[in-house]
Length: 288
Image (cartoon, rainbow, N blue to C red):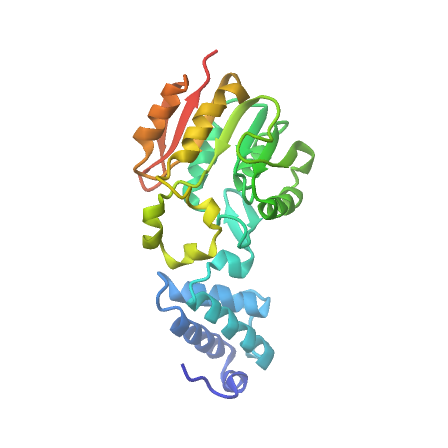
């Protein structure tokens, strides 16, 4: 793609409205692969200028700003996720810090948050907490509840700690480095998890954006079900009587995971669907 040597000068020669339109059109050329190139170009323009779109004027398009804008567009053209470029992702009711060290929170996972908030709990455990989006979301909506977020990745826990502080649940939340249940003490009313559930042989078929996310958060390196076996087997010892285990699943895994829950002695096993009607969460309760 050939750009004018004095791109800022070209934009400055037009009206404010026309300059913004030209900048967006330029960004769109980098983002043709996206489902909504115009929207992404506008988001990146706001990121580059530090000003909302409706407040922009042609004076904002100086050379340094346009260099930042083009650099952001090039990163996105390389299929780097928008959340990594922006540094945040909106999830449930909050904005979460997101880096290459954690899974990018997705709307599908809000199904797990919603299911968790449908049951009573005073103490919750989030295994494989990543950014902390699930744990923090349920704690923020359940005043007085406390929680533990566990992750094997120290880098992920550092991101979670930023979100715990920013969203204001730090007094009710503890983060621990743990390989699933190994470093977790005590019992809980609710255990939630969005474990790596993509099978190893499915990895080559994923969208390019996922190559920027931690592999350990995407796949178990096997059939995509090994983490559910660990969760089902260990839940009984870490749940209070009447407590719940809730996990996000891939859309084809509901039957197998539900059977694991039943085999582990859980009752009231059920499946929750996401907004697209796909199986997304399996729940089960420890008998009273």
